[in-house]
Amino acid sequence: MFNVPKDAGQAPARLAESGYVPLADFLTAEGLTLLWQEAARLGDIALRRDFSMACMDDSPRRMTTLGGQMIAEKSQMIPRLYKGEELISLLGRLTGQDVAPVPDPMERHVLNILHQHGDTHGGHTDDYPYALVLFLEAPSDPEDGGLLEFTPHTPDLAALGTPAAVTAHHQAGDAYLLRSDTTAHRVTPLTRPGARRTVLNFAYTLPNHTVHKTNSADQLYR
Ligand SMILES: [Fe+2]
Image 1 (tube, rainbow, N blue to C red):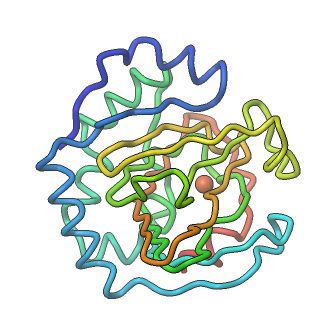
Image 2 (cartoon, rainbow, N blue to C red; image 1 turned 90 degrees about the vertical axis):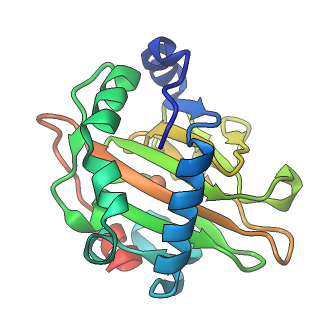
């Protein structure tokens, strides 16, 4: 379902440098088709969200989401991929650490769909150390928005939108790995009607990781 990146050995250094590792063409053509079909099916029961996240500097959430608990109920493919030995072992190589599935089913694997003009997943940090984000749909033109923006070495949401922030464009089939608890990040608004961005976000933890849990996941995925 996914390709092992040729430069996997350089990933731990890249994570240390910026907190971010792009994984171009991560999904095989078959993997992308299967996951896209699964996401399209699950999208029918996903929920529209439109609010400001108080605990994340009132940053906007304009998106449609499906939480991990519902995905576990309705999909075999996604939970199997998420906790499969093949992926966990690859993530161990990419991080140089002993990554593990997170304890809270709601936060393990979530579906985020940006599909309306202006849709955005506003600035935040995650509860768990690593996010692997798999792109099932994305605007092919970076001008259409839906870009990842992140701030190397700082969880300060105020650094987003400043010259300290970095933006990255991804295509369907790509993925990225982010040190997501200590790196502020957001998805820039979709700027063209008809543009869509659908991702699966897989969260992973580390042994002895202390979760400073916010209620943000609850508001977005419950
Ligand atoms: Fe995140």
